[in-house]
Length: 489
Ligand SMILES: Cc1cc2nc3c(=O)[nH]c(=O)nc-3n(C[C@H](O)[C@H](O)[C@H](O)COP(=O)(O)OP(=O)(O)OC[C@H]3O[C@@H](n4cnc5c(N)ncnc54)[C@H](O)[C@@H]3O)c2cc1C
Image (cartoon, rainbow, N blue to C red; front, side):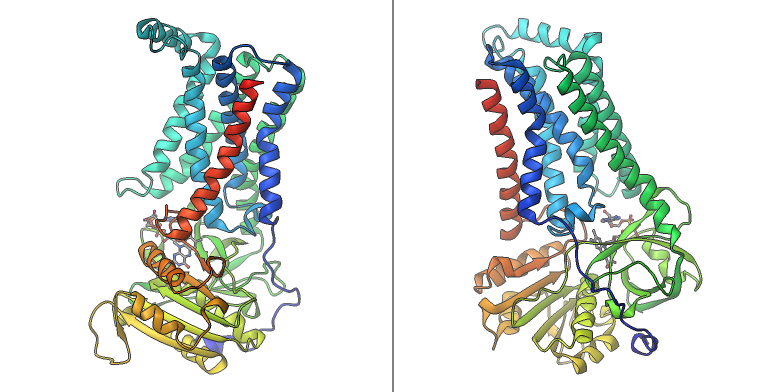
């Protein structure tokens, strides 16, 4: 039992906090880094005389700059993604990837844009000459690799794509594309004749390389260093395993319930064999960590058979999906294994003696899939917590609501609470989170109070997802505007 196994473990001294650069500062730093090469090219070259050619140069400079900056948005650098969260980081990474590809293609086409309509045949010949020119070969291969990279990322969730293959290929392809881009910029870049810009490209490329080395080598090495191992593994509900990991008594791992870690169970396997899981326990449970894992595929399906003492590696904590402090009530909706981070938050609230009102709606496909019911019942005694269970399939227990989760269930959760003074925490299948987020917004919960974490890095369709996409596009539009100003100078 989870509760019994806590005995004898003291909360760690250091207050568990999420770290990271505040969003506004991060945005300012990003914009600065994104326009430095462009600004330097403008500074060292004076005014432009041919707008399409300058647009071509600007798009190449922006493609290269954004490509190098993307190495920092892998989600492994807490200083960068700790405050904004993994969903925003990955959402921006996705959109920036598409922008890089578009900039990369605009680059060669801008050189033929003047004759494209009047004389398409001549334009095609000129394009062919550009593409086959030995001097420009590194740039052409870089564009081809970027096309493969982004194309692969777009289809990565399809059944025929092995997730591990995508992860193994993503970084190395990006690295080779980055190296070729550096070669192209220095050899053929219109503005790279100036030494300052050449130095800037080398700094950007080395930063990207450093980030890749940290992600692929340093972090995996550090993951194994602390000596974590499996303490217990058991099937906790239908299709769900509970893993308890144990670290050294004075572990350096400080986490808040709801954050996540990267777990590897294959000692010294390649770096892309680790998987992200939410921390379903509080800081007081350290040096142990509880994970609640759905049997999703070839890796997670083996977890229940892990023997006590099996060495594992953890990298973390990551993410900012933690209990917010501002509101007088917290409403949670968990779908399936989405209960994991919410359980961690509730454990943390109980440990801190949080007196606020908590409401939890826990939905699964059937009664047998409810995980950690004992732990939740115990939390019900330690907190002002009301738990409502909901199952898609009809079941015998009358207190279990019939799913799927709908706006009536959510309205019921808010009853007796002031919707403007409620924090909403959502975790579960994407469609459930989007529906629930939109429903809570319609019930007058402020958008800034609705928080969720996706387990799939996917593209959301809810209002909050659209707002985030709009913000990402606005940031990129600012960068594009800088490109236009450069061309018109
Ligand atoms: C921030 C975060 C927190 C998560 N927390 C939990 C949790 O607490 N409990 C839990 O059961 N699951 C969690 N997941 C999802 C979990 O990482 C995947 O289910 C798991 O990696 C599947 O591995 P597999 O090899 O068994 O399955 P696979 O056969 O490799 O894949 C099964 C499905 O999982 C997806 N997937 C595989 N690896 C990853 C990955 N590294 N990141 C995202 N999706 C992946 C695949 O696209 C596929 O749809 C979390 C994911 C993220 C991003």
